Length: 449
Ligand code: AMP
Ligand code: MG
Image (cartoon, rainbow, N blue to C red; front, side, top):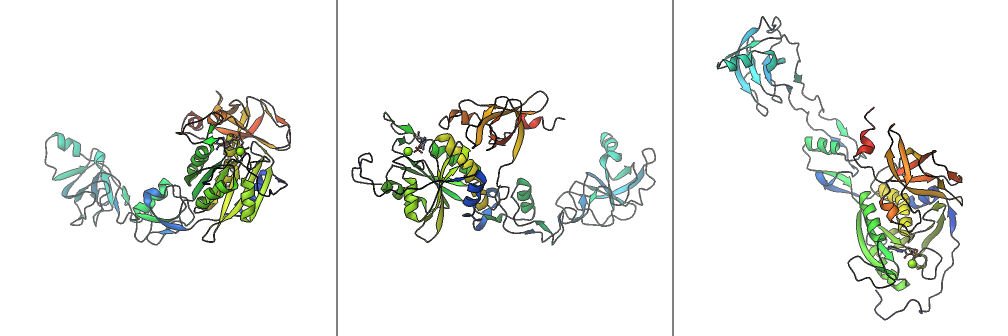
């Protein structure tokens, strides 16, 4: 921070650079930005912290799962040849020579003409080739009569293998069970645990440094004098960075001077990516572009989108020699979020080693028209719901001004009017990129029909 008293409004500014912002489509801007990113290094991650990360090793089994043939039912382990004639009214009587619970190792084989009581998951003793479940024996009747079960009546014949899970049925020793590059879902984490793993090699999460710029900003929790507004961008952008798998660190608010911003960036370049907001328009105090220019590499773009037309992108020089990508978001609160959605989200995904960079979309029928006056791609804030016929519908959530954050808070998606289309009328189908996809009615009736 600057220590001397400093009024940016009377301060004689250093030589100003002038840039003609190049006009790009969303895809062109995204491609250029993503060319600065690559998957991060991998680290050993405790299993439960690995959810959603990318596996950076093959998970190979070094034993069979299940390790031994085991019973799929509670019942009696038998030799199928012994029970071939069994039926409900002509049970085959067999002496019961023992009991095996899950986790036991059978002490003796099942000899011809005998049975062993066995629980689900218990290893099947040698000699036995089938398990007859309790329901197909007279065990219940014997119990009700208070009998000690020293013999059992088998009431159903069995084929070899009945109710037995063979060793290696799920996973064979030597198999690559999950390949490098796979996302660590709950299922993959379960498989890793079943192989005895406590941690996995996974691509680490990127740490995103967030800097807000503007003389008008104060942080929530601070006194807000007349003319000031709360810094919301740092929080909305940090929340998005974390939602998409990053770790957000809010560095602070830089004032609209080069020195103040440089002081903040000095801290910010210690991380994997720097995100600033505001200071990228043509105004006098838009210093982000000046600072980027001093750092060497700068791109200042006009992206053919609404909101979020002005965008800066560059690479900052870190003291350790790294080039740290810097995404300069516009200042308007909705613009900052929409631009982060289009450019920050895919950058995080690249660093996490994930694919599917553009967001998947649904098709919804519009309740309200979406206008496009000037050939930009419009991202309209919409609520998405399902009508009585089960079709997706989208309705505008209110004021579509780039400063109206309230309508963003109520939006479940961004409906897209293409660059070259003047308007999408009410009743027409429109693509919607979902921002929130909660586990509620929106999904549940997808599976109802
Ligand atoms: P600028 O890009 O600096 O011209 O800012 C555009 C608009 O966004 C102005 O109305 C700013 O007050 C507002 N703005 C800039 N930064 C933030 C922020 N961090 N939080 C909320 N609003 C902001
Ligand atoms: Mg400003």
